[in-house]
Length: 393
Ligand SMILES: *Cc1c(COP(=O)(O)O)cnc(C)c1O
Image (spheres, rainbow, N blue to C red):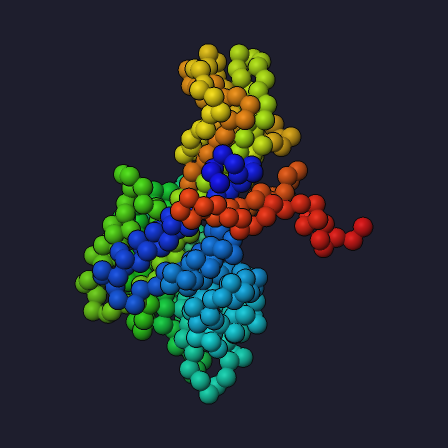
């Protein structure tokens, strides 16, 4: 099978690419930090086949809900290879991960109450998430003015102090981890230097006995002109080399390892002409590749059925839905003319795409995995049968 024979619209998971990204990050970490951990951010792309690759390549599962935890277990992650974050933990799974020596980063005061239910005859280790206000800690990297955060306990207010105080009152619980996570606008190396320096200052101020620092996600994947995995790891090392501790480093990349692993293919199904432009309709949709409607262009390429002439007009390329703004991109005058049956391949669309696609007009598209030159289906297209599954009517 070749890419031109695939049914469209479809996603293609490039297995080698995903493994290469995981391996690249791990290799960079291993040069400076023995015993580092990569947590695969399940929310970024929860396709079971990806979870299996992540597990088989040494990642932990970074989960943020009851259902993500159950999904990770179903896909074969052992309970001690789970990193449990976020405000939506269930009590049952929170205690389960702790009992099985997984990593839990406490996010809320209600979780601190739940610690009461642990057995008094054992010692349990927990981490805590520290609130990161990018505008205060690393202003050049802010996404917007007042780029504060809803997550973690703030060391600027009394919360962090109160939280660590409450945890320390349990005789059977040790606070051993500090978790920070933000996705900055720049994804710059300096952002990690600044936030890690801040984390160290908090560890020192409160005299915490920390074993691991979890630096969260927000990294670039390997791309020309952008920081590499090694650049990020060198930055961690630069900050940490002055401290006497051998902290275990955890990272939780989502975008960095998943974006480049997926392509999306759609086919031109109609071309109209009005208002001095070609209006090209495809069987794909912006809902699949840009579900948050932020993007204006994509890494992309074209497969033309015939050798195509230069177009004398602009070409507006849109999707299958009846949404007026299901517009994918515009080609300026002079680009090759898109005709019926031509294909568009979008690259780097594996992060925050298929996990956010709505069930709108068209259901979930088929997903292929590409190994070498071979394509196999790893998730069939959803039909009305799948859609209706839990409905009464
Ligand atoms: C979303 C998230 C990540 C992954 O973020 P990316 O920007 O995709 O790398 C990692 N850790 C936590 C806690 C998250 O919420």
